[in-house]
Image (cartoon, rainbow, N blue to C red; front, top):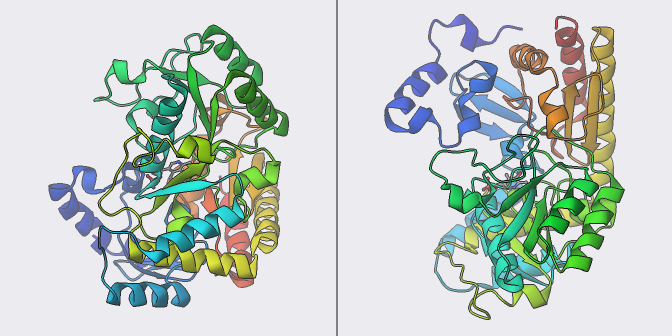
Length: 434
Ligand SMILES: *Cc1c(COP(=O)(O)O)cnc(C)c1O
């Protein structure tokens, strides 16, 4: 199938991109949207419904990006829309507390019992920033440990992946982040407990927090070793370090209780975002009451937000979580993700390539790689060119995947059996040409 966008000399998306670049750096408000890593220009989206998005040229695509995670009920779910419109009619922001914040907080706590007190913010970025600040305030220590390839938002001290293999001193990934800001950020390899133990020994009594994506989804999707997670928990208990699980992507995505419920390892602080906002800008950080009571106005750790706990966003989040709790779609999402990844792996094998796959609930990913992918180095060594060809081939088939090999893919409860059949048939055709 050839899309309209390809036959037209210049598409509406291309002309919008041209215009956007005159006003917005690179034409986009978040870098991955620019399609640079697949060597294309972005589709401008005009609307979306259920499992499909529609671009400005009127082409329809089956969507496996789901706004990068939030849209677990599919796009423009009528029940969420109704709740949002109802909330809007009562006023869209007050800068004062509302009952809806209590409802969403209680809902999250009931799903994730490690959370005793929770603070709402406006994005995942703010959530991880708040989590670090409270961990530092609570422990009176400055250093933090993060893992190479784990993404926690564009927060200054976390914008560091790895120096050379030999050094564990943070080197910023971005211009504009002063070296002083990341000098307390220590980098470890994911799934390497011994490496973290060594860091802890060398920085004894100085580490405030260890932060990680329990199931990393921002370097492709990586399987955590249960022993690695348990080992981090024990290390943190022994050394008085605050363990922070960044569940911005995995929260309510991989299971009702998040990734921590799958592995039965529980953090001191969790961060959330994406699904808890039901498609609106929301983040949250929460955990042990003893730690969270350091947050102002209870304690001396300051953190604030004009639109935090926004009633419209709360309404979208409450409705989304209420539906997820009632319908428990996770077993079905698990099964569908597994079937999809198995079918992709078989199609790749038929085309002479090896796929490494991982899937958890409605989140999954695959690498073109012969060997198991356990950390960032392995992920970077996977075959990026094959992914780019896969992405372009699938887009030609009217199926929209993330425009980068190092992102997760997402399904929603609105994806139907026929959507998956169509995807598998397209993948078989595309994988045969890689
Ligand atoms: C998306 C994401 C963030 C950042 O959330 P934003 O809402 O984009 O600020 C942080 N951590 C993880 C694990 C994420 O996937």
